[in-house]
Image: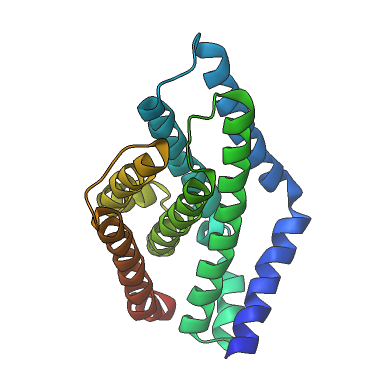
Length: 219
């Protein structure tokens, strides 16, 4: 099972490397968005505004990055995967690939924010850890939504419609968690509670993906 999962993961990585125009297109989207913010803001943004801009951009980056993970798969290719792998192996490989891709995009976004906009973060390593946690959470949610939308006649609009109620509590929790890295004081144990909530939501999404995707797979 592990070998098949890594084989599917390797397949997605090789396809992404061959289709470099999509990868570079996402990088261009991130760079242009951050540069427009740099040109439109006359002064350095306050820490709350900087934090909000960062996570909103991560949301849209994830939609553009993860949304194509299932929508690009043709019916014939899905039939081939149906013959060589189980649905659990396939969805786990997709989740892992999208996590890796989103972590890369989140790191690039953070570097661009650091270069073009003032960096108000007091604890850089903790914020970087929050960025990695947030990238993982957002990618998990939209991977599941992409799988559902792919079975609904390739309707990409369903990704945003179904994903918004699930991603909203995660995004608000990530914004609140990252405020601690700007020097904001929280009561004892509050940060661990927020981190546990985000981790619990991630676990719920993974469990839902493993349970629900076999039914989508059979269709």
